[in-house]
Length: 139
Ligand code: FES
Image (cartoon, rainbow, N blue to C red; front, side, top):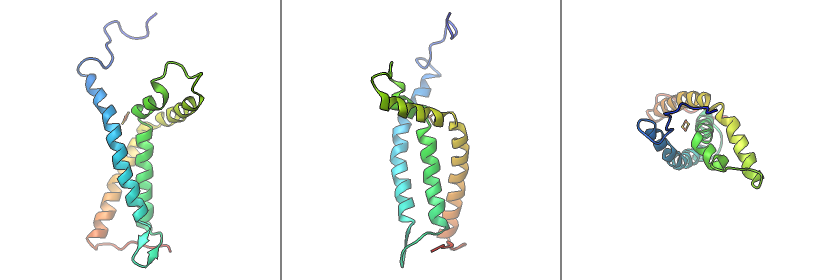
């Protein structure tokens, strides 16, 4: 017994073929994540040395949430083992795939949280750059 409708063609025809485009954006998101993590690392630098401020935590959380969102994507799950027909010869891939699959179950939650946090991060950085607020430094 089939578990899909008879005429179902998956992502091979319009409009669902457009769904495939998002798989390529996963690679682009990895480039953006590198920049975000670099920014988060730079946020530890202050004119008088290394420290941690609210901005540091804001940028760290921003990079972490967007990383969670990205690695919980179906494209990442596919790359990490979803493309394999059998796992019995690839235990490491299986373990990775299982981890990504668990994250994938919360993908929508990560999407919303990271979306909201990106907005708040942008506002925080903008207000800092305009001199409206000052970054509270912990040490
Ligand atoms: S961004 Fe890939 S499934 Fe949501």
